[in-house]
Length: 185
Image (tube, rainbow, N blue to C red):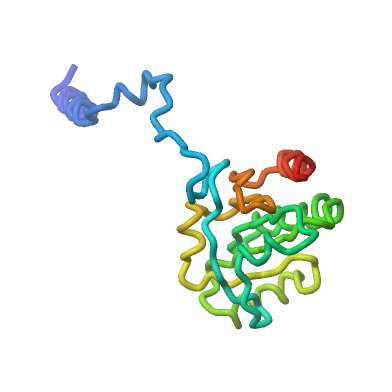
């Protein structure tokens, strides 16, 4: 082996050796290292009391989660976090077509956490065709609600009428969401 190839091989070995802790990636543990969830306290996880929030909807109305979930006749609330991107549009379109019509006692909230103002969130709602869709669009201009639910694009939360989180995961095809909504009293 010539010296150039030998130097390249040594350099590659040094780079690989510098990846300390790499064995964890190659041989992962079967242990769940997430902290245990405590039910009954305020938090974003299933079985916890949903963090309350107050936001403006795109029409300037003040909406709080506690007032929505305690509305007589409302069995639950779905909260979907959107960036108005094509993936979010696919999720919301799927939800509008296959979930929303089947659950008239459920409120559906879209939380816009990227537009930066109520006026810009309203513009996104209109330009994406969600005005009058059955969703209430809320403007999370400071991303406080996003943070309190540890959410990101596509996160979908279900809160029951007692204010307890029953579902918190990324939207997929709506099957698990429908299952959770069907189980609400």
